[in-house]
Image 1 (spheres, rainbow over the protein chains, first blue to last red):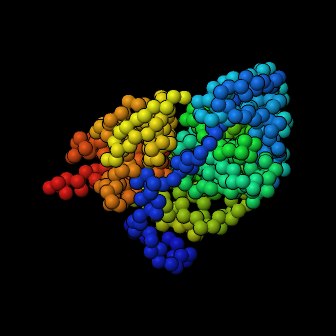
Image 2 (spheres, rainbow over the protein chains, first blue to last red; image 1 turned 90 degrees about the vertical axis):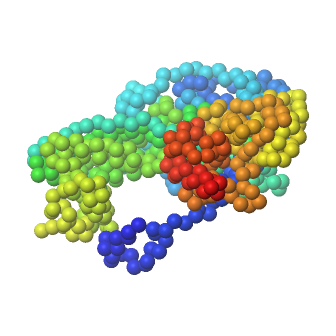
Image 3 (tube, rainbow over the protein chains, first blue to last red; image 1 turned 90 degrees about the horizontal axis):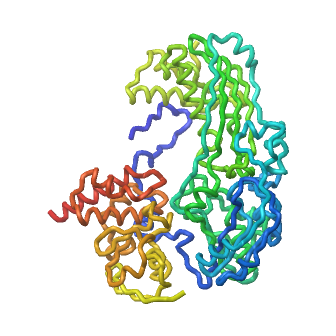
Length: 455
Length: 160
């Protein structure tokens, strides 16, 4: 591998001596011999299995919950409902003041998505827990549900979550995040062409091979050890501490080995209820998602709808961009208000556009709560933006790579969200890509640099 | 639940244990025999993480009842290394960066071993076919295919 030091010669003085050399991963010998210990590879005597009773409806009021038959089922040790949870209202990012708390650990008044947790059943075997869960009777009053983001934002839409009036996240900037830069209408007025397109994406499941789960053991002394495959150890520790109203030093979280995550294990779902179960029964508790739960219950990447309107000149300059982005949080916030906000800054892409207007909404619907997945907030945006760039190039009859050279950001350019561009390397990447892919562009593009702008 | 005795050979060692009647081989291996190298990825026969070899044939241990393995010879990834010396498949995966999270790796190795045991000099298509029942969500298929071909080569060099 060749290191092109000429690109960043003024920034990196070290020898980068590891780059270009193959090094054995420290964990692979454990993987190939089956010795790597994943959380579920531990066995404890007296282990209880937790199975969740889940809502079969997208949206319903809970009239009553009857656990009496479940409690009598052979092997069932304990049944947990909302009143067993010390602080039964949380939201993961409350840790960084992104509130309000908007989600229960176990629902008691209302369910807002199909699969929402209502009752936890603990039994001496997985089978007994499943059979016990099937004997819990929940009486629901089914409510109208809303699944489309723009429908959810209409004034007469069913209210998905009482903590979010209007079915949108309330930012300090109002019902949406916004970026305003230049005069977008003036940009459209002078543009030779205008192209407006709508891009939609579906939720995407991370689908790790190892499903989400944890095993909790009571250590005595009112302390608990939680073996977990979380990707977010301190989110888990701190949220469990809030939900259980227990100081953090009573919770010993053990993780580190994750059988695939991709963002799907960043939420805090299984640990608090399993710790509570271990506390109330005094026995080790295992709560492991089935494959069906992993696919249906764990948060996927959010569905997005992105409306992009661009003004472009015949010479290839993008002169105006207006974007309205919608992020489908599903029924609860989890990480979606943050993901939607990331998109706001990202929609101009790695391009310098003098007139920009961006609105993004984080919308609540009666769908499975969405959350983190690899680059959430920007990955789908990039899909939409780059398809749009290709369409714009076609519209003005220009090579799509040359079109990107013309609009690429350079060091010193002010981005629409008022961050000056630093350390840009898009032009150099495209120059190299052009050579490697044998996709030639005009000579003047090979002479461009991210560090300066031609006269 | 009634408990029943099962006897089989696990990685060359005689084992005899009582298991709950009706449990899967995967459950028996992991929770009774202390071999956690087969993984429970789906427990419905679709992901391949639980793959083991029973009497020379590839089997999904999550769909195999422990009681049907009476008297059988069972191989798992935990038994492949010989006194600390990695099997050529294991070596090739380590050297070829063919594992990421590692959860599919033991099952993947057993699927590949079944192939090499029956077809010592496989084509690339043979390898793709052999591991087609094993999902790797870290999307590492290409280095895995290369590792299996590398292991086959090192085997045939030894034999030659």
